[in-house]
View 1: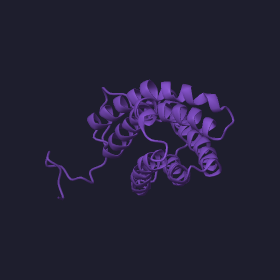
View 2: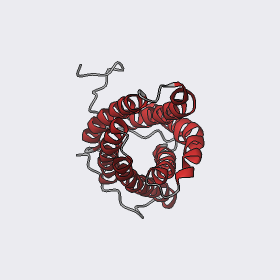
View 3: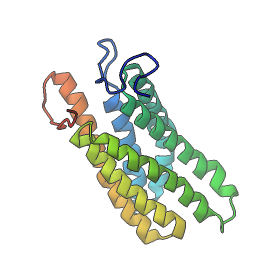
View 4: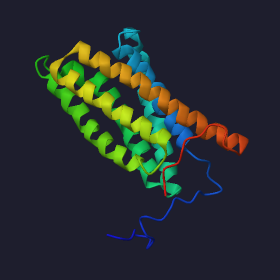
Length: 204
């Protein structure tokens, strides 16, 4: 279809609602913090940090991102709405997988359970990376790094490879840093009402 249900072209640029603040810095911050803590656990820097990551996954990484996604729908931002709502759901499902599902799964089946879960998110992130190339260089970098992170974590999940998962963890740390920069830039530029930290928009 060439038009949305509202009768407006799908390619119409996003128009910010003057009564709704940009939710992207919130969504990016929630994603960054949860990703960083989990990634540090995956790198074995602080393995016990996985418990902190699970707490963040439910409230901040999950709940806050879904809220950001809903506000992006209101702002007519399809990319932001899809990304934040989906990754908010990712973190909540990650919490459920680890807290409720994994303990009841036979040990022999756990690699396939984890691997298939991560594979689905790897595919989603890969095609969202293509869409991010019309957003900004800062956001595109987040998605490129996240795709690489999911590739290594997926392989590590299927093969129960601590080494491969550790590599994915370090890429996750880089992903979190990029996401935090994009969040920092968004909230700072909005507060100062000028470009303090560039994100290099890619939309034409």
